[in-house]
Amino acid sequence: MVDRLASFWCRIPSRANFGDALTPWLIRRLTGAYPRFREADDARHKFLVTGSVISLARAPCTVWGAGIMTATGTVGRGLDVCAVRGPLTRDRVRAAGIDCPPVYGDPALLLPVLYTPKEPVRHSMGLVLHFSDRPRLAGRFSLQPRTRLIDIQDPVETVIDAIGSCEWVASSSLHGLVAAHAYGRPAAWIEFRPLPSGDRSKFRDYLQAIGCPQIDPIPIRPDSIVEQSLRAHAIAPPRMSLQALIDSCPFPITL
Image (tube, rainbow, N blue to C red; front, side):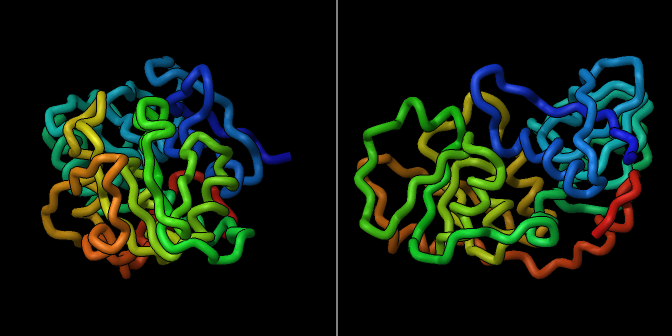
């Protein structure tokens, strides 16, 4: 029997958010067992994998691929850091006096090693909304026939299947971008309004990790989405090696 790892991830009472749900999903796929949930400030050891949760962590804690939410977010002392999402997170970790190797990458980039989308490509653009955007904007979209609206709060594999059915993606959700890139889809970073939490640092952290120059999101309105103009702003999938991220994993995995 495989030992269950203890891990922290953000849990939404109503419906899980894709980026948060990826932590237990990835750990189960990588180790063969669903992790035990532990609060970030639990005095017992836990792992942090995906998500902008590193500022919530308290020792004893091992970080593999998590990141910051804001550019000024504090990082608790005593963390064991194996890899982080990007260089902005590494800067904050080192500012806290914690050793942090220059190993970058969101573990969600490993998705294709673990799961193959089940739907054929039949849509042009996939539109992924941050979970806070969807209830506010529902019913206000004027979409072209081959555009697919993807619910980021669907089960993990349903979201992946939907992204895999699209030629490219426009997303106001960070993990909409990451998952699209993981499966070789160009992805445009869009914004309907500033998100209720964060300051765009999590996006820039990820984009810097994949070698993308400093950019801003494309501001759009739900009633004026023009697929052709957005496509011109899509960021190509990264060609970075993920071997260092894999090698840095702090728990035994099977790939």
